[in-house]
Image 1 (cartoon, one colour):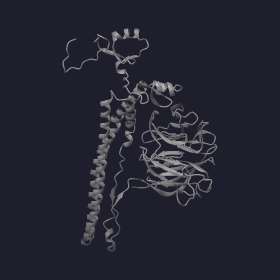
Image 2 (image 1 turned 90 degrees about the vertical axis):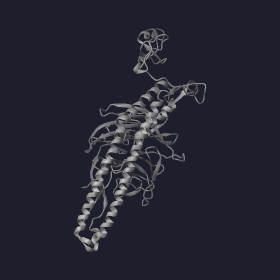
Image 3 (image 1 turned 60 degrees about the horizontal axis):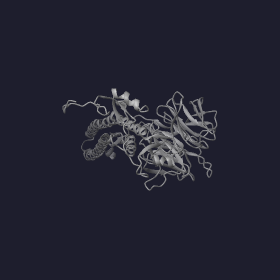
Image 4 (image 1 turned 60 degrees about the vertical axis):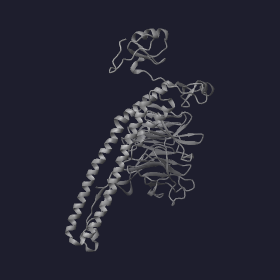
Length: 547
């Protein structure tokens, strides 16, 4: 063959001995490049080999030795134990388990990694860059607002002449402090986002540099890292702008004549007096958990092992029977797209119900029993509370049902949970759970680090947390349900994003008896129901305000 110039790209040659034709095909069985001519001869000798187009080839599984049997290669994947093993391990300990070729699993993970990387390049990184650009624009607007405030104060100062000069100086110092503080915060947020972009680009470059030789164990670890990469997006708070308020000129209150300087809240909601707005009566046996659909319909789990869908008038539109449903648990959730997810503790399976009412198996949880479940509206991940040998953990899955993360231990390797009855997610990615056995609410970060616990208010002798949810301002609502030691204990507690008690939304005198189900609708109301009633009560606790 003629020598090809260094500037040209050589075509892919056939691996068959003495053949140097263009390789159009690839044998996935023996990992060999094959031209069109040699393909027929190869299949005659190797009838069971899988030959595909070269672009559709599988990556050869990198060599990795078993740590228990160093002489054996890891080449089998146990579907039951969700673990990669060698042939000796399979024969001795997994022979009755369903298995798969590790190379297939490896290539599936490789494709998922490439898909996630594509998503990061196409969505996450552009979104982060938009944040950086937006911060720059907001800084310019903020400085203009500061300038407007200075002009307003100066004009007001002219009206009260020389007597206000000293006060004007003090007010300007206040503005300087606010300006420096807020601009510094913005610069810090911008730097965090730029560091995040650098982290993503470095992670992808590292993967692409090692993609041809990365081991399975390293690939699984890397897959988890890139799957969780979007969770590390910095939480950027909206900037607050100065707002000036004036009062009538009064010499005794000259300091107020230049206006009170404060940061204007960007939120249009404020807490109001809790009022009941409606009641929904459904002809079913109790209410354990409520999940709201985008269509404003609601899914409910009752005392007879059924999931019932109903509207705001109480009309039932769908029903699913689940004999293995556990009481006092959030066994179902609704995705952002409106699909229903529910757990089956007998089959150790999570099911998905599409918007067309087709039921599909999402994932099998092996030897761990799935209980409470929640679908994230931040990234679509699925959080499932699992129980095995009386030990509780939370497992995070992707939208497609791929396992991403386990959350079980604190930094001292102690169990975070005694039970997980209800689970939700806050606007900052915190995972909030109600733990009836421990009599507390447990909150961890998105990465699984312990943040805080809440064990009730001192005015109530017992705390038995059931339904839990969060709102658009990051507040946590939790239902203190039936307590055999204090029958008049049902109430709804309101906590801030850091777990500090704010108020009782419903006191024991106001709260329906035996309450346990809690959710928030799209009109800033919370809905509450209990196992002793077929009525769901709706209360308003937010009202919109003019900015």
